[in-house]
Length: 345
Ligand code: KG4
Ligand code: ZN
Image 1 (spheres, rainbow, N blue to C red):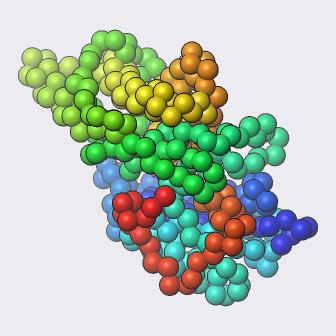
Image 2 (tube, protein in one colour; image 1 turned 120 degrees about the vertical axis):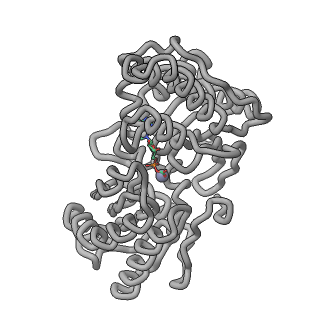
Image 3 (cartoon, protein in one colour; image 1 turned 60 degrees about the horizontal axis):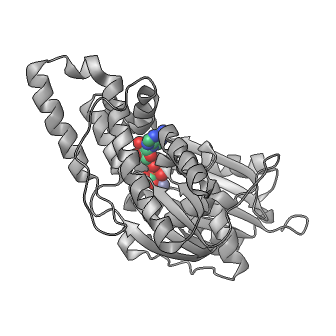
């Protein structure tokens, strides 16, 4: 407790970013992140290397978050940590660290579902910003490297998944496309940048035909693969010559797929408060599409600040704050839950 305010320390280590953040009654005091460059040369996250890097980063990252917040460990009221979903070895580092700290400073632990973090990142309050937050109920388009979902949110801790991908996540589709075009990892940001210089109407790829509000992204990925294979037979420099148009066209198709089901969800539920979250919500094409569709259809739309789109501990701390206010602390034997299907929202 500091000046009568509740202080939450958040810890995030579910994939390849180590992060710690401090919130005071929901206001951001610090949010420190260490990204892991080591995976870049392998073209994807290597779980063993990720957990080793988390071990190296976690202590300095937490210390910096405490220092930058201008507090001491004594001021912390609760420690919120990502329990899952994510890579088991990565989750273990953050979970074990949070437990050790909880024991040593004698403060309670709050377990947090990473996906709730992406959704509630809209409630983090930042000094000097308008801090406009969505009203309940709202629909969240959750788009990341591991997940693609439409979630109905009725209260801070009341979630219902209306639709999910049945195969790949949209972030994976971005990353795999980037790999085929030899653009490096993670590919999403590179495709986003190149797409701005390209013609998005040049090429079309196979769209999924999935019932309800579910998504599928494996077909469009295969469609791109075959298209590139055939085109390269005719012209070995096809990719080089058409890179920007390929990125713009593929990105447009992914956005169209995402938006079609989102529009459908708003019609089925009658909800017009729309938020986006997760790494792919940094995509400028998707952000423009949500804003434009919102203006056309009378939605209130909320896009996260870019630093809150990718994995960060501030979003873990905000969920921690809402849970802590309701007395939802957890025991020291809470083990990581790697699979999303086993960790209900
Ligand atoms: O939420 P996140 O940091 O990690 C997971 O929980 O998965 O999301 C990472 C994903 C990666 O697939 C990355 O390529 C994608 O987000 N991403 C983007 C952009 N920035 C990150 N995809 C498209 N456009 C971007 N600007
Ligand atoms: Zn994430």
